[in-house]
Amino acid sequence: MKEDLASVNRAFSMQSDQYDEYDASNGILTWMRKRVRGHVLAQLKPGDRILELNAGTGLDALFFVQQGYTVYATDLSDGMVKQIQQKITEKNLSPKLSVKQCSYTQLQTLQSEKFDYVFSNFGGLNCIPDLRAVTQQLPALLNPGARITFVIMPPVCFWEIGKVFKGKWKEAFRRFKKKGSMAHLEGEYFPTFYFSPADVLRAFGNDYKKISLEGLATFSPPPHADRFPMKHPRMYRLLTKLDEQLASIPPFRSWADHFILTVQYSPVQNK
Ligand SMILES: C[S@@+](CC[C@H](N)C(=O)[O-])C[C@H]1O[C@@H](n2cnc3c(N)ncnc32)[C@H](O)[C@@H]1O
Picture (cartoon, protein in one colour):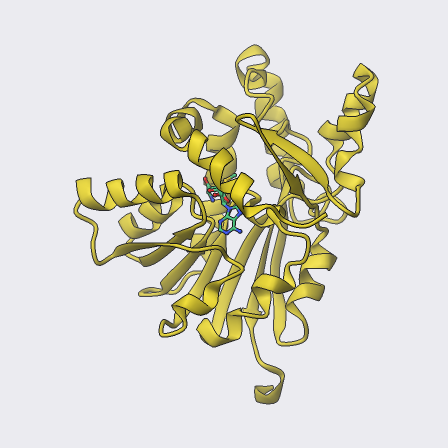
């Protein structure tokens, strides 16, 4: 299967108006976003210039601008880009936050820019079959020593495999389909692809070294189980505590709803 950028654009554009409201109302997403932001803040240096890929409505971009960083947010979707532009205008964020509509497979359109950090959150990169389409463009955009954090959905997620007990075989094993499986969002269908941390590191190649890897929601449920924290608050707290304790330990750092992987650009000729 090949990526389908037109369907992805339509699906996420339809979601874009309600995206922030849903995000704020979903306790699982709130916990996951806090973990991702904590991870990134621990890697950033003062004054870093961040390139955000698949930035959605700009929730994280806004957060990092509020922490004093400069963010260049990019996304494919008309609706998502409109939401970011609205935030820039309403909160008067230019030039600390800027936005450009572009696919992360077409980053050559940014080539006059240089960045210290590249960030992609919540599985935006799971919409293409081969991550080299992104990683091979990065060297032209990176300052020496730049770091990159990708938050990606891996093939093994206990909560999805558990759907087998509800007889939902197709859903339980959809992440294992090497050639991709169809996602259904807002009436649109588009292929999604799942990558292990090893797949992602292979796509980066020898010019990048691994800095940090942690699982995100290994034991605690994924965002679509949004009623779980309200129905079982103590259990949810316990599971997130377990996640926080074991996030960096194999195999839990790779078997989760998402994983957070940070690498550093260290070109081989400079080593
Ligand atoms: C699940 S949302 C995540 C958005 C945001 N990172 C967040 O944390 O809320 C996935 C995003 O990926 C974007 N996306 C998907 N394929 C893309 C591509 N080829 N280039 C750029 N953005 C893309 C979608 O438009 C959507 O905004």
